[in-house]
Length: 236
Image: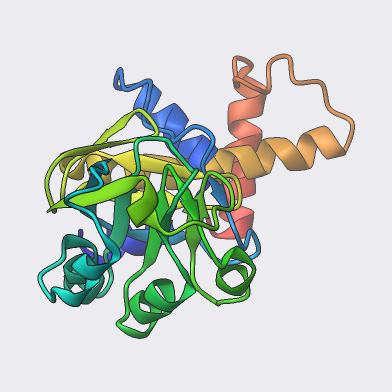
């Protein structure tokens, strides 16, 4: 992802990105039931680095597995590249935590762009206080070992029923998270910027009392002409 695409994605909404993806036939790129712990932060934008959990088996998943420096969860936290988003497949099960505040803080300090799970986080109040984008299903106090076994790093996963491939572009805002196929990221970002300009124009006119008919979509030539003038006036 180049710097221009990243900057464009910082200024558009997941809702707008979903519409741009829908125009290309991609209907299921938004992670359902995954929410931000800190909705007031700027957009989260980064390439996906993935971690996959499977159901834990008691004889293979005692608490002593964390003594192993090659444990996949620990390796993911230490190897997720700066600027990337750690996306975790927790099987949509929040009964045990995907991670806690210490691991999330470590990701933040390493320059990672954010973390997403379709499960839960423990220490969620502490994570919510960090200036770091974190998205989950709901709080979850037990350690992941009670339910999940970390298995793979940076492989294709499913997160909240969305296929996530390493390198896909992940965008989060105050509403949720959307996944953009890497090959489409540039064109989706550029189109979303254009859509956002138009939607800002429409919102201004609707707030002035204008009907949406002929305006949204702009089926009236007068609406298209007025939008062009609005763009020139606002430098957009």
